[in-house]
Amino acid sequence: MITVKITGVDAVKAHLAGLGKQVSFAAAQALTQTAGKIKDATPAELDKALDRPVAFTKRGLFVRRATRANLTATVGFMRAQAEYMRYQIEGGTRNPGAGGLKLPAAIKPDAFGNIPRGLIAQLVAVARKEKKLGKVKARRIAVSNKAALFYGDPADVGGHKFPRGIYKEIDLGGGRKQLVPLIIFPNKAARYKPRFDFQRLGETIARREFDALFAAALKNALATAR
Image 1: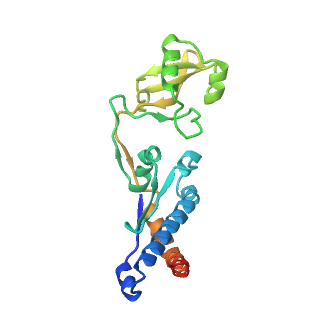
Image 2: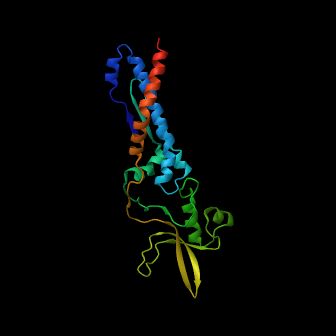
């Protein structure tokens, strides 16, 4: 989240005796407009910083307007997007829950870039019954309906450690099978490095845009003052 603050308002008011209300009104307008420009610029910057961010992420921004009583405008991500974007902005460690992390591997995510709702339970049920996926479901998640599924913690083979997860089994012939992970549940923390400097973006745009927006808003406020 970015907070954009105006400084020096009291000094401006002192030079414009009797125009305090107009100054505060203009400042609130300019702050809100600056926050809007930050919000509008963010999706393109996300495209540069992240690997194909989905539309759900890019439209998940809000602006909290400044007022004459509170000369602060706020730009931030809404709650759902903030839950994962904070790791891209601040970095940090994401600890697994009781069932481990749920990370997509070879499956096709939904339009929001997430594991489709209910898919894990469906795949686990198919694996336990040793059945195959229906054609429609298989096409939707880009997994062949001819593939047998395995759910559990595979034996480590050839020095490779397989985490617990849902795998598709590929028959290599001669009794040999290869496991390809669809969704894995590693029981270890995921560590993230900051990748998107949201604060710097906001400060850059605020420095570039605020003065002109404030001057225009103040001119209009003085022209319409009663």
